[in-house]
Length: 159
Image 1 (cartoon, rainbow, N blue to C red):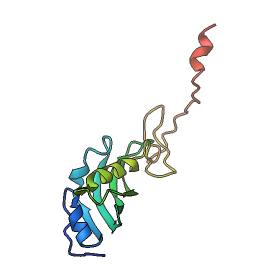
Image 2: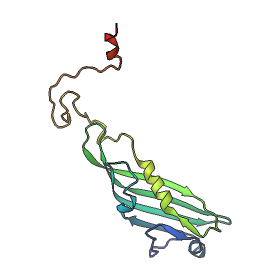
Image 3: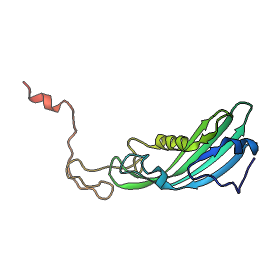
Image 4: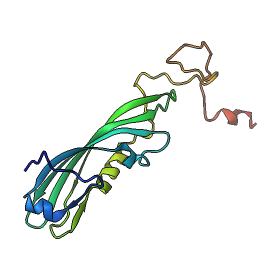
């Protein structure tokens, strides 16, 4: 069943009895980014979030499938510039039909946390910062001669 006029609760807590009475539900909503501001590590910031949900009522449980989409402002791990990146994550849960409520907020925040990249890059061809002078090599070529770094270089003076 699809209900375009169904008001998705802002706290994403659904009453199981309502879902059963409607014999299922398909709904979507745009969510306030402030509800998810502490999900990503600093200095990353969620800019927009939308959610699609599908509730299917079974004999003993309700199958909930969801998709969370949006965009986040991230800091490039190479050049340290900020950039906007889209995200998409899917989730699924099957609470028992006897449960009083279905809390989707936990699933949504978990799915958002899974979208975070440990070392995001603004583009695959990002050149990063110069190891000598610190300039952004995407903006200009500084001309510094960078030496190859070896983690064993400090050992050569131990004789």
